[in-house]
Image (cartoon, rainbow, N blue to C red; front, side, top):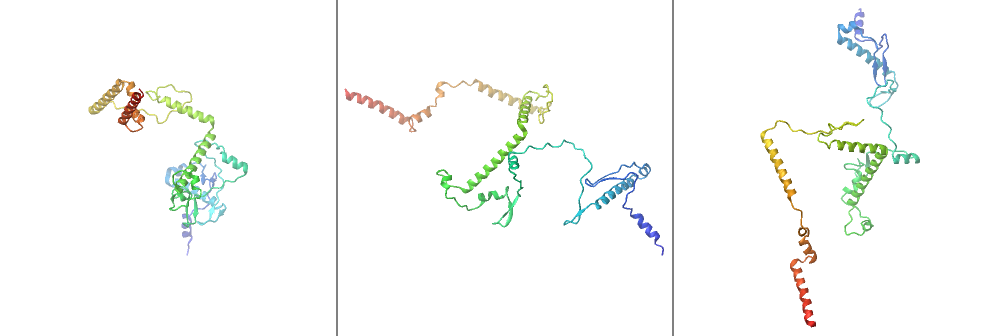
Length: 317
């Protein structure tokens, strides 16, 4: 039995794993990138474009897979993983590299003392619940004292309250301490940001903000103002214009509203300034002089004082 035809047909289905071209393909396994520098075959390109593109893609993928199988591997739960090398192709960036941030006050202190930074996990083990809980945030461990139904009052509770009449509230004390820590951290963060920015950058930002405020103070929102050298265009500054053609009812309502506003402003300007009599609050003065008893009691006490002085005078004569 001659099986050479069957073998030849099966071999035609599977191409060789080695890709041979005039210019070898450049493979960058670190980026999973294959570069083909060969010129396009115009004959195959014009005959059947789809088959030509599939052949090029097949050669590139085959070269990439061959290079991946030649790399060292390591074991994992999902099977062997190839250790990709360092990329050799330099890719362009749309933006420049970010500048390194200056160290914060704590980072300088830790570097001087040789303190190693240890990243804390977001979750920690709770012995009482026997489960992992959040360290902070919703249902966080830092709110345990605030949310528990019973709390032990310390022996020096009256000293903590500075002998005030308010009862000691452990939940409120814990909440105030947590908020104080949050405020302290935010203050330190802002101080680090200002220190990293520098006084020159902070002053520049303040000048830009002041300039933007003065620009939008004109009727044209700074559109026709003279631009300074190097001045950036203000973003988010738009002036709203009413349409030139509006319904008659809308124009009527707008005119009535304008007239009403002008009338109210005119009444405010015609209002006379307060006189000396209106400046004095008579009711408040009477209440103060009578010590809260009222004007009648004040009048009686005044009349009694006058009568007593007169009677004593007649008795002496």
